[in-house]
Image 1: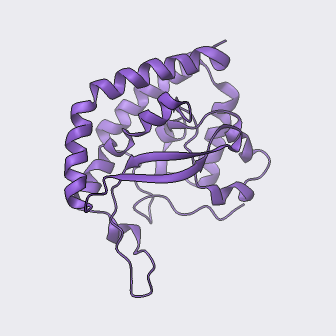
Image 2 (image 1 turned 90 degrees about the vertical axis):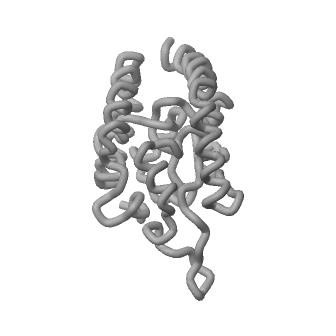
Length: 200
């Protein structure tokens, strides 16, 4: 009952409430990013969702678009702005995804939506992460986020898919609040974000 109906209903209700409550923060961050990112406060990217259906994720843009002499984007560490770094550390960049939740592309809680290019790289078990809607936060995020390996992350995602329940989602919400406060697991050991997944 929860997985098939109530989870989506709760997502819609809470997503609407959260975006209303956070609207003052949304506006302030929007203004700062408009200034630091030359009028481009949002980051849009196509990601695979439930059933591998492609949708457009929306986040606050924490990196600029500076490129090297060959026209390639500079490394994440060089493109991450001071304002962007603060926004990422406080997880404020995730706020716009509430629009994805309200629309139904995402859930508040679930496996994080990754890049389309990773789809052919998953093994059969890892691909099961697409059996449910992706989330803003999830079991992998509260158990290491970007500070754990891809195998660990996928293992946690699949465990969540197999054990999804209201009590588990409530636990993840509480742990997410804790993680945001202590700013843990935002970066991997070797990158400002997470190294690219290159297959098993």
